[in-house]
Structures are given as structure tokens and as C-alpha cells.
Image 1 (cartoon, rainbow, N blue to C red):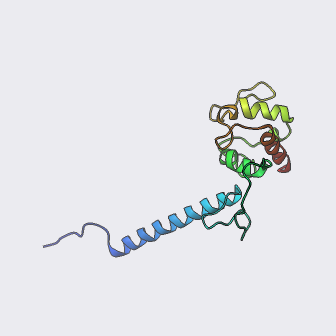
Image 2: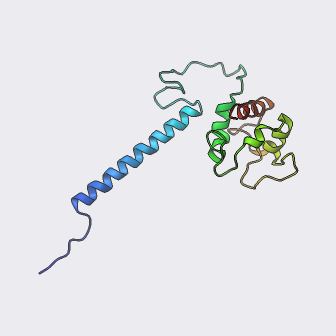
Image 3: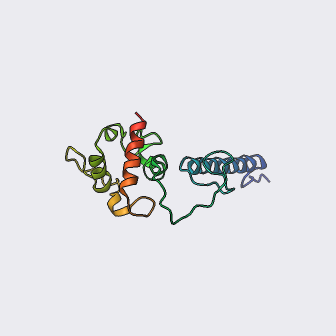
Length: 150
């Protein structure tokens, strides 16, 4: 009687398990790197700089806007880590806009030449940055940061 073996062999199961473990490790590494780029603390308390510890912050004191952190958390997912483009376009042109032009495009989706940005582009006047209303200081910080990427 010739029976066919149904299911995975030990070697196939081992390869599958190894692939699963590697996928989880790569995902965790990518997540951790993204948190570091955004300046958010890692689960073990490290900040963006290796060995940095979480310091007590007076939440009542206004914090200065951090352009690279704001860009990483709100823009880089579509426009790339260095604004080189991805799902969204390269932002070299936007870096040359005045702050007022950049603000209009970011908040309301209108470019200086009158174009309406693609529907996928959030209107940050409605969504805000990280769940809070966008401020002039945040917009200026992101605009300034874009200018450093040229």
C-alpha cells in the first residue's frame, strides 16, 4: 500500500518557522528604527540617541517644534525619509516655496500655481499633526527642515 504523506515535512516546517521568526525580527527592527527617527522613545526607554534616557518634561511648558520629528511622523511615510518621494511626490519644489505657500499647501491642499493636491494628501487644517491642531511653529519647523534637505 502506497500512502502519500500529507502535510509538512520537518525540514519544510523548520524553514517556515525560521522565515516567520526572521520576518518578526525584521519588522521589530524597522519599527524601532522608525521610532528612533521620529525621536520617540524605544520600549526600553532609549530615545533617538543611543543610551538616551527619558527625562521628566514639564508638560505645561511649551515645547519647541521639531521639524525632523514632525516630518518623520506626518510626512515621511508618503514623501520618503529625505523628502525624495515615494507614494507622494518629491518635495524639492515645496522646499522652495515661501512659508505662506507651504502653509496653504499643507493645511488646505492648494499649491502656489493653483493646483489641488491629490486626495490622498491630508489637509492638515482638518487632521492636524499627530492628532492635534497644526501650529504656525510646526509648519515653520517642517518648512525649515525641508530646506535643509536640498
